[in-house]
Length: 134
Figure 1 (cartoon, rainbow, N blue to C red):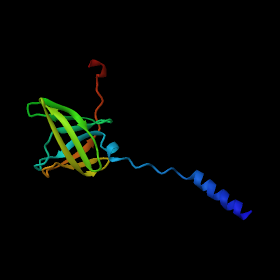
Figure 2: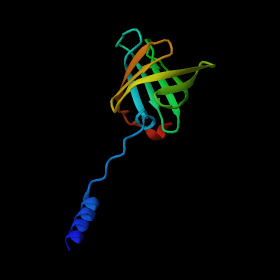
Figure 3: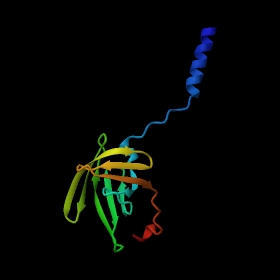
Figure 4: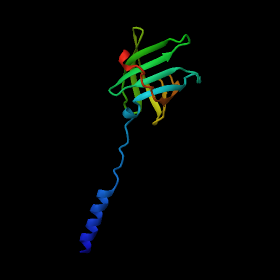
């Protein structure tokens, strides 16, 4: 009788335990929009955003001094702590592998092959006010 009670307590305890949340992989964590907060020369007045989309598509958006915006589209992967990517820049393809030094829900720090560090903060994209006007 005592043995049956112990078994019943163990089964009930196992059924009532909250599920353990699955840790998101770095490939999942990187998806989203990131604004550069510190460039490789230590500047904080940057106007660069990275959009990492599910499935490996990426867009680099850079606002220039004259108000124009340059867009560069490409692809990326996350392999361990490396982020190899390639983007089309005015007819030329730039390929590079960044090393992820820190990746959290809100912060991304990468180092390029020349040892230059850049820091990014996750931002929430504003919804398109006129989605049907494209």
